[in-house]
Length: 368
Image (cartoon, rainbow, N blue to C red; front, side, top):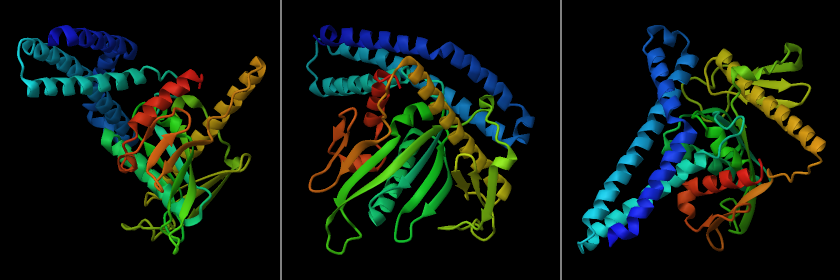
């Protein structure tokens, strides 16, 4: 009976997985991984540490993705055997274990299928995330810091390296703003749907009367600039200021004038970096963030011109996107996709994959 009920689903999942592998080009991934392994074995690679880190990150990602696909194939094969053995048995515990494993594999195949929807020009890039406290005073600053923790915990859960470039701390609590990188392939394509305003409703920790407070924080997601992007920035368009790092320091970062602030005069864009001891390193990181912002600005201008030529009028999706309600009930709901959960503690600890997967599908339907 078990074989009759579940063999078809296992076969369907196997076919879907094979289709996913075709879109992802696993053969190309293996060839790329072999090439990167050869480069990684070259002792001169680490003479350029930034390039070496990029090579090892990419290799680690490819190996992990290929291992993930192979593991899913093996689990589907094992499931077929499990249900065949259970065909004439009444072992309820073994059946529940098999059903639980089937549900887990189905979920992972669905998540991989979402990856095939990422076909945008910059979707395969690493991501730069900026978070800014908006309306709501101290609660907004505290909420901005909470959002940062959500994304850092999400990245940690997936084994993605992160690097915080700059954090501006608020006077009472929390942060005014922060910029950090998620250094994993497809991080931009995965997270770009998080761009927009996130609204928090809760009992204020900063109101002595314990009243409910609404706070807002804005999230900006940008693709990391690659060498092929050709963002030329003349020196006379930049104002560069150096200053002493602020906030929780340690290890000497806030004892010297190593922090760098760069203002792009034509656009008024301001970026800063204070995470390194070296002023040179901070300047390089700040320039990378500036280039990413200018690339995104250029991309938006080109898209607007193209839409105008086509006579299109696209509705902006970078406004309020999600509500996090902690009082009088607990519920987190995405306003675009309708995905919601009452398990607010899990979301605050970085479990946001359901929201992200739905966003990717929604953005695809919107032509974004």
